[in-house]
Amino acid sequence: MRTKVKISTGHLYFLILALLLYAPIFLLVIFSFNNSTQLVFPLKGFTLEWYRQLIQNRELLEAVRTSVLLATGSSIVATFLGTLGAIAITRYDFKAKGIFTGIAAMPLVIPYIILGVSLLILYNTIDIKLSAMAAGAAHVVISLPYALLIVSSRLVGFPNNLEEAAMDLGTSYWGALLRVTLPICSPALVAAFLICFTLSFDEFAIASFLVGTQPTLPVYLYSQLRFPNRLPLVVTLAAILMVVSMVVMFLAEWMRRAGAANTSRR
Amino acid sequence: MENRRRITFLLGLPSTYLFVFFLLPLVVMVLFSFREGTIGEARQIFTLRHYADFMANGVYHRLLWRSMLIALTIAAVSVLLAYPLAYFLVFQAGPQRMLMLTLLILPTWTSYLLRIFAWKLILGSSGLLNTLLISLGFFEKASPILIYSRNAVIVTLIYVWFPFVALPIFAALERIDKSLLEAAADLGCKRAEVFFRVTLPLSAPGVVAGFFFCFIPTLGEFVTPLLVGGAQGSMYGNLIQDQFMRALNWPMGSVMSLAMLALMIVMIFIITRFVSLSSLLEM
Image (cartoon, rainbow over all chains, first blue to last red; front, side, top):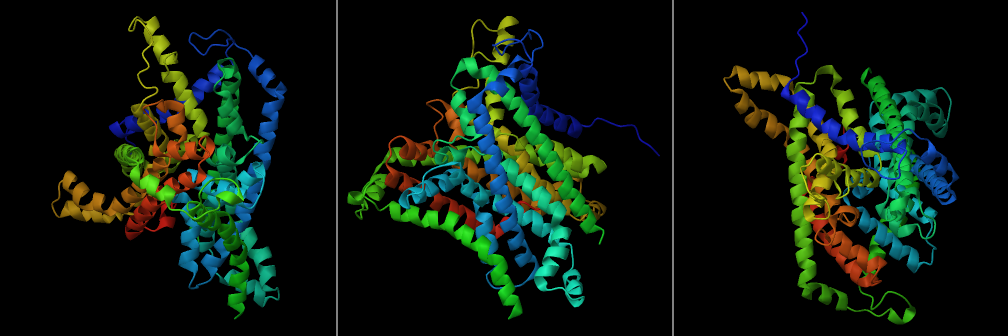
């Protein structure tokens, strides 16, 4: 028996909120193709001029490069550390477990400004020069809880005895980790990497304190917001970034859920 | 014994990392708050001056208080917006609810700076909404309704946060055993009664998690006030940022950060009475 699709108040509410969330993104995309330096309606005509100017802007490309390197590096480290931690907390019982998880999850609930300024003081005290790398070290801290939780929720679904079976069949513990545990985790590892990447790639608050003379993309963008004549370029870049972030996150979500679905079949 | 070695090996690196880049900086900040001045060996004198200054300065307290109120408002409104949304997704949206939830969360992962910037383009005094309204003859001249004010900060942050707040509420509602609701109805509860006496209490941990998950970062916010706050919309975070980037009085900035951190720790202590930290991300 099929009932007619009824648009309820709930659907309407959902639609309005979704519209509000997506409107700015669509607007930016539309204006990135608009043939005018002013961001007003009516639209003037279609152009790829802003995209052309974008790929010729050296400063900007440099910032993109910095951000990509930083996000890649920090998310690899965060995923690696998170995976080690996840194996420990899901496979073993030990006294310090609560303390470890508590401390690792803390960056989720501490304002980024505090992480930023405390690292600024530390770097200054031990004479480490501010740089994109210095900001990347902080990005690992904020990404770690996500990696830890994503990988451990994957591992929880798999029984220990797979590793034990591998060890009975003659491989060492580390061999079993490498050849059984890691492959099991792989969808979660990809998801964790992508989420950490996005987190770092878009992060502004911490980076603004720590990057020194190597602006990441958000820091560079922020510095450009003051110049009205750069607006079309900023808008174009924003359009690209938003679309890319959304695609990456969609992939991450898909990997994570695919992993979770496998687990629940157990 | 074997297990011990493995645990040490597995936890060694992440623990060391967290110690060096998370705990150590906080400890150094505490030490720094007792220093006389920012730079140089000569300023490395123990003093409580900055604490005394902080205690004596009413402006700081008022700003901290105001920022608390702003963050409370934002968290409360976000919960009010997010609860019906999560409720709809769990109980009415059917099998598509995961996809719908993902659709809502997706934009929140795009640069927050840029989304605020986009809204500035829409709502600003020479923004799209104003030009539209002027060309339609509603206004004579630009009216910067939602830009550069405390309200602008509040509206913007609600917009940024409510989808995140919906996540833990969604998770809590999903976990409710639906047969309990039927049982309540069978026993004669009206729909409103079922909601207030069964659904709402059972989803309370999700509400608490969502509330604090929004409240805590918002309290430390300094970027949004810079972008849309103007002179009236400053928050406590701006004060801290000023001490570090402009006034270059880092010890004072440390004291201010620690004051906020102390507040947070009290809050975190309260939350963990209700929910565990890791459940914030459970989906």
